[in-house]
Image (cartoon, rainbow, N blue to C red; front, top):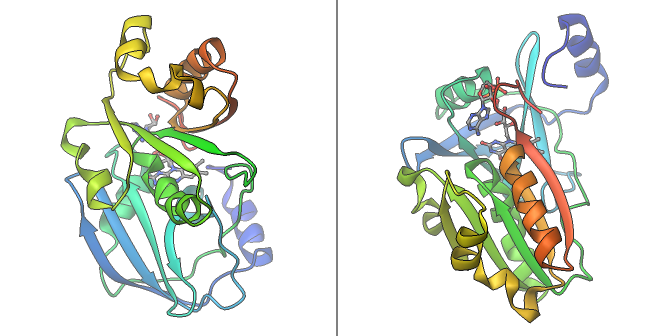
Length: 238
Ligand SMILES: Cc1cc2nc3c(=O)[nH]c(=O)nc-3n(C[C@H](O)[C@H](O)[C@H](O)COP(=O)(O)OP(=O)(O)OC[C@H]3O[C@@H](n4cnc5c(N)ncnc54)[C@H](O)[C@@H]3O)c2cc1C
């Protein structure tokens, strides 16, 4: 629910469990449009998994969803990787956050549809808005010995960001990727190989790109697809 009347958000805020006051302790610009924001707070009794997210109340009538990219429960440290799209209130809010800011935020919520322990291989596709999800996936994929690859469609200025975040096995494709037969056969050749035919495909980021990629996967593989569009051109939140 990205937009709602103030009274409704006020009621939800009253009823929803919150983290005690948190503080921004570090911000790092990984590029002009990707910012890592590190908070400190009391994470006791907080459960975090792959893709756990927080709905930030941006103002009286708007909320936006962001993924927890990393957390150290003992130290009370947790991080976000945000894309500053420059168009919406969420982007402006995240751009303005600075060290020393104090925020009361909702407790993170989990989503168990991303990670499936039984899947041997994962292909994780997305854009800048999916980098935090990839960061939350990586330690679990490595710990449980899955084979995996990340495919990111990124703006030119962000093509090195996955490396800066320590992500491994990344293929970066341009944002205007056409998903035509030719493009897929040359750049996404791996999904045609027998080993990857039954991978779990997790598609996030642009809803439009996710739908196009899902079509290719359905045509070319026997893989299991989970698609969760994070944004859609012209639409507020998702
Ligand atoms: C479960 C979930 C987890 C998410 N995790 C993250 C995360 O960790 N990091 C992150 O950066 N985002 C994340 N997002 C996406 C983020 O919530 C959306 O991009 C959101 O729309 C941003 O809000 P806004 O107020 O900046 O823009 P909005 O007010 O929602 O939209 C304003 C305009 O900007 C456009 N727009 C929105 N996002 C983009 C974009 N990425 N690129 C180009 N145009 C855009 C919209 O289409 C609209 O025209 C997540 C979304 C979901 C559903």
